[in-house]
Length: 137
Ligand SMILES: [Zn+2]
Image 1 (cartoon, rainbow, N blue to C red):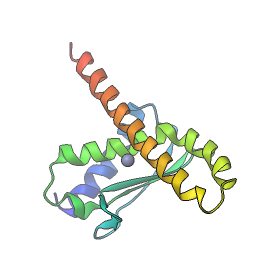
Image 2 (image 1 turned 180 degrees about the vertical axis):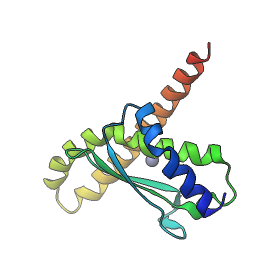
Image 3 (image 1 turned 30 degrees about the vertical axis):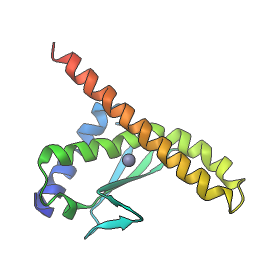
């Protein structure tokens, strides 16, 4: 997909997809950074930043990442980023605990929480797939 096709798909579908997941009350802003985000040993195709108290989110999609991808792969990435909003309340609550940690503890805690968030989103993706499969009958 071209960068423009990625933007058109995401901008045209994000609010409907959010409503499908019961996230229609979130105000979602989009950004499409250029190039690729490579941090550490992994590559990122999308990222979700949330403000639980204000129900606002910023979803970043690295459009160039999808050059050789299908619309389905893009859809899965967008859904993945939206599902991160399901744990935004936990993230918000953990900010209080995070502030109490010292400099040695904070990075360990942060890594553990991020792994927990990714595992939670993967579980939610399976839940969505199961509900979709069941609704076809
Ligand atoms: Zn994720």
